[in-house]
Length: 148
Image 1 (tube, rainbow, N blue to C red):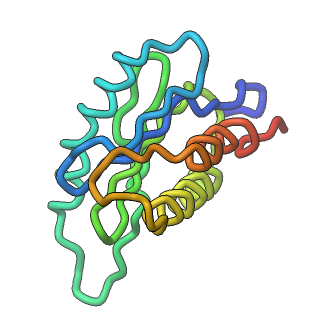
Image 2 (tube, rainbow, N blue to C red):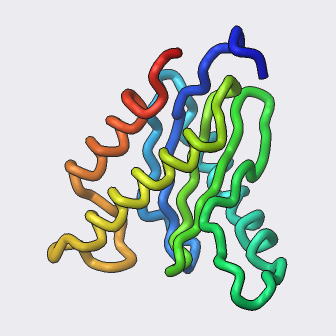
C-alpha cells in the first residue's frame, strides 16, 4: 500500500466467548449497518476454528493475533484469540494500516476485556455492559490510528 492511500478506520469491534456467544458488538462508525456488521462478525467465527485447527510444533508459542480473517468489498476483518479462547474481532475500513498497529489495537482491546472480566460485578458469559468498557473501545477507534 502506498502512503497516499487513506488510513484505515476502526468500524466495529466485537468480543465473542469460547462458546461463540457475543459478549460485545460495538458499531463505531456512523452510517454503518449494524445488522451487516453483526453478520460479518458471525461469519468470521468459522475462520477462527479453521486457523486453530492447524497444529503447531511442540514448544512453539501460539500467537493470539490471527491476522486478516476475511476481506470484503469495503472493509477487512481481523482476528485475535486469547488463551481462554475469547475471540476479538476488528472490522476496519479498507485503507492503509500496518500489522504492528493492528497488533497494538488488539493488545489494547485485550487489556480492556481483561479489565471488564475482572470487574466483580461482571457475570461470566453475559454481555459486557460496562460504560467504561464501551468508552474505552470508542477511544480506540478515535486515538489508535492517528493520521500520518
